[in-house]
Length: 80
Image (cartoon, rainbow, N blue to C red; front, top):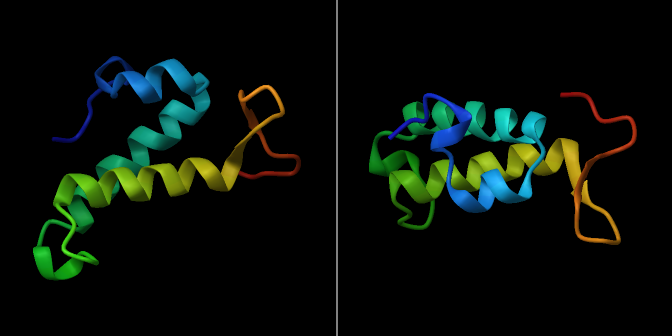
């Protein structure tokens, strides 16, 4: 179930992440959805959807982090 636009993202993603981070999430999710279509390509018996969400969050965390107030902010010097 790849996402076609940011409005289709899960509420947690839409409500927590800034728009740029949402774009990263969507692109990473969609890419992982295609890449890990076959069960033998996934780790730990995860479903295709679980794997795609894990990859998407990892992609976001390479560029964004939570500040002291719990808001997602771009890391200093992060390239996207």
